[in-house]
Length: 338
Ligand code: MF3
Ligand code: CO
Ligand code: CO
Image 1 (cartoon, rainbow, N blue to C red):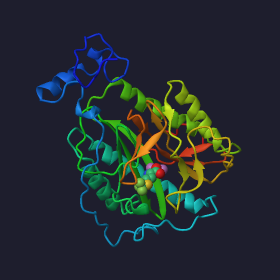
Image 2 (image 1 turned 30 degrees about the horizontal axis):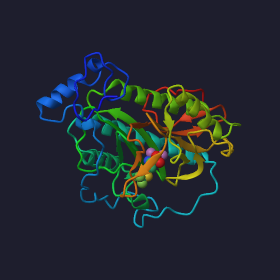
Image 3 (image 1 turned 135 degrees about the vertical axis):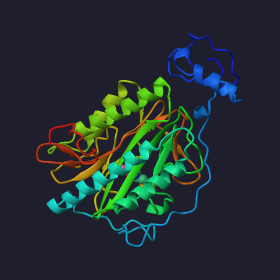
Image 4 (image 1 turned 60 degrees about the vertical axis):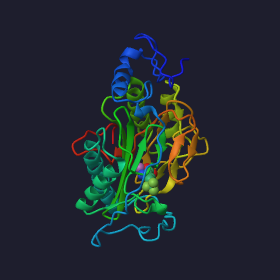
C-alpha cells in the first residue's frame, strides 16, 4: 500500500488512500487538491487526521425553574429502579420526553457545517432543551461536563464537545438526551459534515440499517439477545466491527436502567421483552475492529485502529403487538407494526 502521509502521487484510477476501495478520482482527489491549495499536507485532509482533545468552555448554567434529574447536583445516579414495566401514565410521559429529544436532535443537526465547533453544537442543544422546559441529561451525569455527546470520526461514543471545529469530510454523532415530564428520552444520529467519502456515507447508512434490524427484533415473548443477534447479522454482511463495550439500556425516570441491550449476540442476554418496557437500541458500528481505547478524559472512546465509527439510537417501547419507536419525528411513520 502507498504511504498516504508522504503524498506519493496517486493516479486518478488508483484506489484511494483512505481505504474506501473507490477510485482516487471518485473519492479524495478533489479534497486533496483543495487542501494543497490551502497549504495542508497532501493526502491527509484534516478530516483524516486523528481527532485530538480541544479546550472545554465554561460550564453552562440551567435556570432554576427547570426540573432536574436526581444526579444534577452530585453527579451520582440514584438507586436502581427494580420495576421496569411502565404504567400508562409513565408511557405517556415517555412519549413526550422522546418527542422532545428528537426535536432537539433535529435542531442540533441543522447547525452541523464545516467550521462550527462541537462546543457551539453543545450550546445549541443546551439552549434547545431549556427552551422546551427540559434539562439536558448528559450535564453532570457521572460528572460529564457538557449537555451533548459529540463523537467525531474514530470516536465511538461519549465525545465531549470542545473547541475543535468540524472539518469538511468529518462524520459526527450527535447524542441528545433530555429530562422532561420526569422522564429521559434518548436518541442519536451520525451525520456527514459537508461532502464525505463514499465509505463513510455507506458506514452511516449501514449503521442505521443495523439499528433498524435490531428494532425489528423487538416484540413481546422474545429476549433482549435477539436484538444483538439481528444487528450482528446485518453488520457481518459488510465485515464491520460491532462495538461490545457499550450497550443500549433501559430508560425512564433513570437515564440508564435495566435491561442492558448488547448490540452483538450475547447468549446470556435472556431478559424477556414484555409490553410496557422501554429501552434504547444504539449500535456503534466500526469500519475496522470492534475494540476501543479510551482517552485520558475518562469519557471519549475511540476505535483501537482509529478507523471510523458510526452510531444511531432510538428509544423504543415494547407493545402487545410489537414495537413503538418513541424517538421518531412528528409525523414520521412507525417502521414496524405496533
Ligand atoms: N446518551 C448516551 C447513551 O445513549 C449516554 C451519554 S452519558 C454521558 O446512553 F454522560 F456521556 F452523557
Ligand atoms: Co444516547
Ligand atoms: Co442511550
